[in-house]
Image 1 (cartoon, helix red, strand yellow):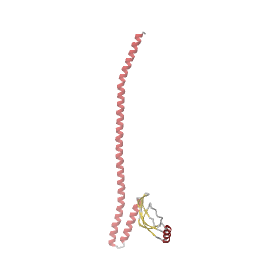
Image 2 (tube, helix red, strand yellow):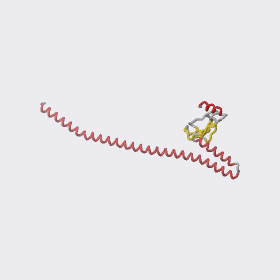
Image 3 (cartoon, one colour):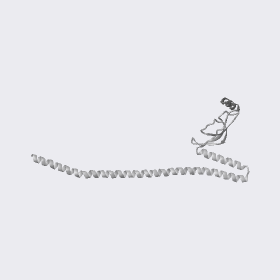
Image 4 (cartoon, helix red, strand yellow):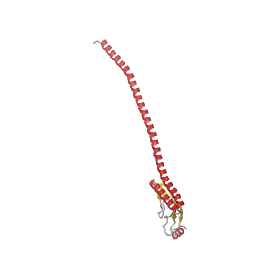
Length: 186
């Protein structure tokens, strides 16, 4: 083979390669475009799925809230029924009103307990500023200083969170102790 023939053969191969490259270029561009469209469609589907999920969760949360409200309202209706029965019985028997009110209070306390509300009963316990609201200090011969003498208004806790502190009267200790402490301060 002569040099010219070799060059000619080399040129033909280069032309064939160039032709193949031109044919492959649109295919590669087409593949990239197809891949882009495919990924874009997947993204849009996922976006729509997430939006549907978000809406479904919001609806389920709202339904759960409404269900809880219905349950509590139903418990209040039981207490209302007891109060209406108490009034009805009061017209027939004068002593029945006390019994009816006591029954209503018991029903109400049971309903609160059922829903996780606990009463704070601090009488004769040490004063706790996290649970009690001291209305006043009073001298006491029987109870040591900082002990709850009397509960003026009950407090309530819901699942370890304070709803309302108990309003209490707290012992200031014996009269003698207070006089001694006052003299020391002077």
